[in-house]
Image (cartoon, rainbow, N blue to C red):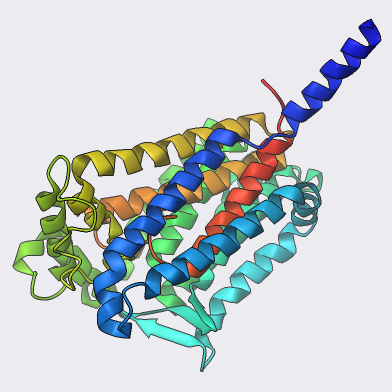
Length: 388
């Protein structure tokens, strides 16, 4: 009898160890469902105007969500062999993640817009930089956990990873004119370096070099920066209402939407700014429509969900069974959280416009598919995580 009870306890422990992080899954599903509802609300006028069908965008988004969920489940189920494969080939993944950035130069599939060349269209439109972000996470996780690298000293612990980051960032700036993606990659890199156990003195040296490097870039490329569309965005950020007929138009309309929402909003579906006043209302500026329709309460709910996502991601990273999975988990968590923070900061005019979408909520099929694949990795890591 005692033996039977012991076996039952062992089976129970195995089941607990093999469960995915349910709070994280619920948070993601809530964001996903809320995103589809808001895409329907925000995109209806523009979809009707462009295609004669109010449901055009939400049907596409819904299809991407279903496909993304299927991929997420697949990644969770095969997490162990996938993680082994990623760890084994992390250097190749880094090379491919850089090479994919040059696809925007290929005639016929390259798509330009807003003074930048950062999209390709192969049946569906996507930003190659989305794949590069994931590739960098995998590379750094592999680099810091590869015994052959002997991570010691300033060069190995901090400077070499920084050099690995500068290559894709330089390509993004000079080839794609897509600095916002480079900023996200920089945030991810710094967080992974810190979480890898880099000594404080090396981090301080790295920060000093970063500030000096930024000052050098601003000095050397001062003329180019002041004459580019980026300087116009800074001007629109500082004086949006003085530039509302041009570069500040989207920001001003977004601020009108936020101001109209007040505490509880004007009601779901009742936004006025989505009627072709706010460009990309269902994409980069969907948070403004959330603010208008659901008010401060709706915005707070979204921020709370992303905060809970970040907390669960960090907990999964702490509980991961090895350092590689831990760094992958913290990288994915940083990627999604950083993009959410940047998007909300842009919409509220806290920082200049960067063209960053809001994870799970903004319209974009390929982006949603990639995000849900990342969540699959995160859930798979939680499934094999150690119990605390």
